[in-house]
Length: 108
Image (cartoon, rainbow, N blue to C red; front, side, top):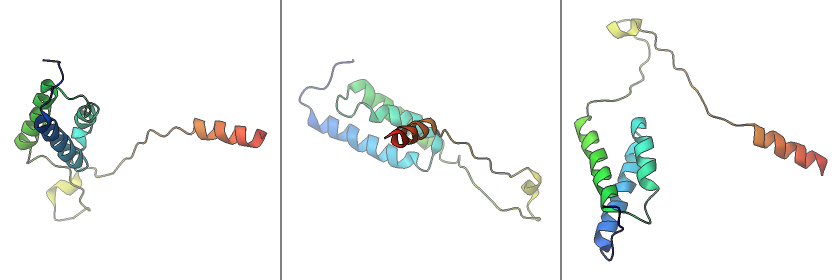
């Protein structure tokens, strides 16, 4: 099952279209990001197994259409507004390369 498709360009194009559409959907559904990035890694050497995995992601999306992330302002009439609605943000920034580059540029 891990053999590449030989000669069936229509299946390769189908996989590319699915992966591209999933990439677009991942912008709206953050939980898809990892799966879609893994599917996108094999665009040039797609297998039948990859197509099967892409279809599983589509089935997950269909089964979870009612799940969503929503951000609402505090509303005194909303019973859920008592829940802490603080938005916390985390980043995975790495400033060390910039500091090293700056030190190298200063040494020149």
